[in-house]
Amino acid sequence: VALAAPNVRNSGIITARLGRVSLASGDSFTLDFYGDSLISVALDRDTLASLLDSQGRPVTRYVGNDSSILADGGRIEILAASAQNLLAATVNLGGIVRARGVESRNGVIFLDAGPGGDLAVSGKLDVTAATGGTGGRIAATGATVSLLAGALADASGAEGGGTIVL
Image (cartoon, rainbow, N blue to C red; front, side):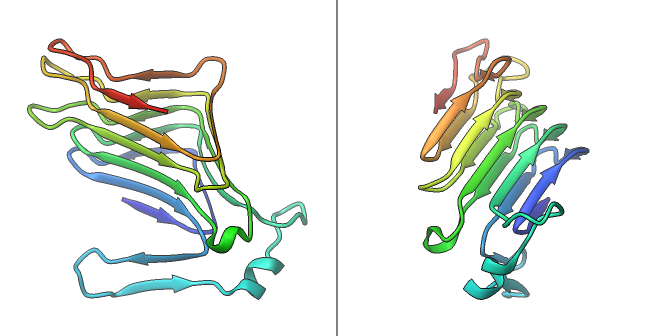
């Protein structure tokens, strides 16, 4: 599952068991599911500078979740970036972002707000081992990474914990 646009927000339930979920905001995107360079979208600097949100304010690069993203045994990537730091990037994660281990496959959650961006987590990040095994991996990067009140990052497992790098 891939959601890519200048601004991305999930308010529903995304499920990709043993698969990959990517939510990405940025200035250009290349989605290449089959290696044939079929989909490619790019915005130029003038177009970006003229974008306004529904309240008439300049658009920033934004990715948000306030519901559920589930990819047990798979990988979840949430990325917000802006070429040449033209616009600030923000990632706000509430709700549940879950990639629990399935059989021998550990889950991975990768969060990146870019070198000048802000990442705030108020929900649950879960890469626990579902039955036995070790926990998966959570990695988060950005200019600031904040765990807000109520946030939880869990990489536990019956045979040992996974890795959390915030």
